[in-house]
Image (tube, rainbow, N blue to C red; front, side):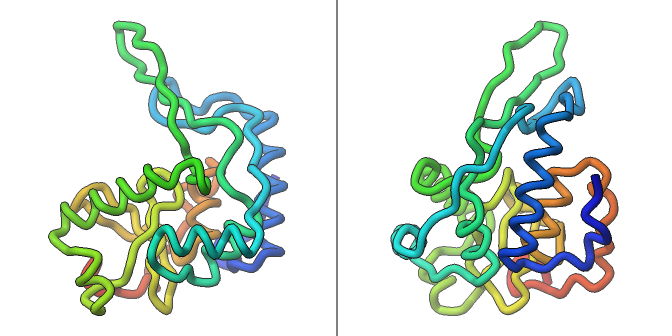
Length: 199
């Protein structure tokens, strides 16, 4: 099952619907990929996307207007129906834990807010400073992948103040994280600098 060249994937609803269908088919047949780490549970499915009123309320809660790629994403799908599973892979046979993999509204609003606040705190910047234009706003879409609210709408992998380029757009980030065969297929040679976060 292939989506073609990852670099040709745009953030249109049509492309996101294709990824939705491909990923659900992929999760129906795939077994866990590793003996440790966070993974998407087998037979996971995307929740139904948000309507325009729900999107408006979501933006209001977050405090920032969403870029078109994020609006299209949430119009198409809104998190998964199963939490991600974390295998510890240790000698103590520690029981797996569960937590969301793709964030859903309204279920994960508090978690979204916590992740944003953590990154802001670790990088010594406030929401007020972001609103004043010091840096673009960031928004977690999956794990520690954050969409950048600027004209390029690229995705960074952000863990505290450890920040690296991850994908040229939201769609490519999703594909890179969902499908094993695409994990190392992203060419970031044309990744544009991100004000404050990755200059």
